[in-house]
Length: 401
Image (cartoon, rainbow, N blue to C red; front, side, top):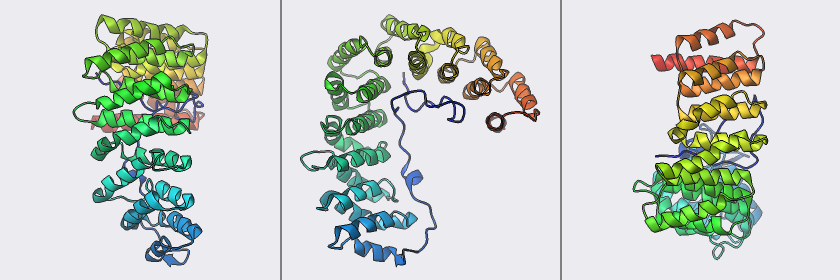
């Protein structure tokens, strides 16, 4: 069973503030998406791309740094500069142009033939023995997110492990952990055992909340390893993490335990997560709802509790429940009734949560579409809610065609 974690959009940002204190794992954009705009001017600052490439060889480090920054603005033409940027990211003696080259490699156009060399160069920057500057290691960990789905990432697991255990910055560790579990998810034959082992080491020794949260979510996303000895170690470690005084960490530890086990063994941690839905703390209720949503159909038995949470006294709690229901995918009558009740709410944010939940579940019944069409007739309808309804109806009708 695939357990999906990632950025859970609870309110499209225009209806509610961010719900979680910690960053959540998110998928890296494709190389094409990350490329600068096409059709850049042929000259920037009075110089052509060829002129700026010559500046990369300047003896003046400030000119080299300026050249790197400027080159990123040349659109698809930047592909020809990649070998030079790779060399600069690895060997430039001045940290300023070196770190800028590392950053540039997540912005420029990269052709398939250069991908492996870029991945190798960036990953090598995570090794403190090869890269003494923490700022370079940090930016390399960010740039590598662009390549999580590339097969060549499997060849740099040792470097990623170095990043996950970096002593100088929790952000380097967090980014590296994110990349590790996403690479594991992309491996056709299942996650490499080395990935599980690294995540276990992090969970056993790292004391930073964000890193631990990322690791717990990553383990849940990877699911059960094929190696029974590694599985036993994971379950033991997760059991310990589930006893954390921090309820958020405990919830995601239980979530990972559900992902690691089947049948009766998974029911206990699932029930533990559901129990947190009754917490008097909003953040805890939200985390529990998100964890159930991340478990998809494995959490189907807890749908009635999430339907009840659609009446949460806090708007953000309502959004969490709506998002979780959409992720689980159960569109039974009680779920639809609960969301439709929200759609008619006088509070714009709650109404939006109802529309968003119906959109996520793809409930395209006449009852739903007629209600949404009628809402659009209201001249006083909030412009943000109107936009959400119009988008939802458009998606419904396009899907029907």
